[in-house]
Image 1 (cartoon, rainbow, N blue to C red):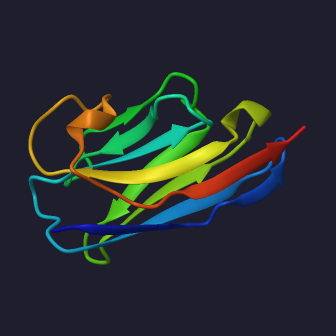
Image 2: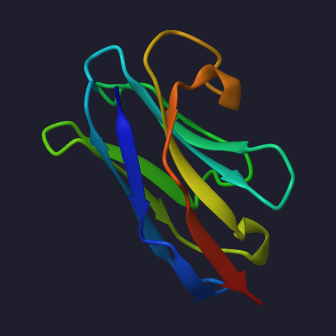
Length: 124
């Protein structure tokens, strides 16, 4: 079983930066794919970024390309999301998630474990 804890959220002005971190415990081996999702109110969780175990496969939502950077440190069992040039539309509850087997990386239903989320609020 995998447990995930997000941190680093907060309030920031437009154009500012935040770095989110996800600490994982449990089974996170070479078959593990890590992703970040975000959710606004009752909307479905939106894929933000994902990264494979080796880091050779990285994916971003079009809305964050060029602004966000995902990375992972397998020795520390952490996955980070560096968010630069933040916009008010980035405001959401951000979740870290892990997928243990192959699946659709863009769908929240493909992931097996989730953290509790960390709030990011960007003021205009």
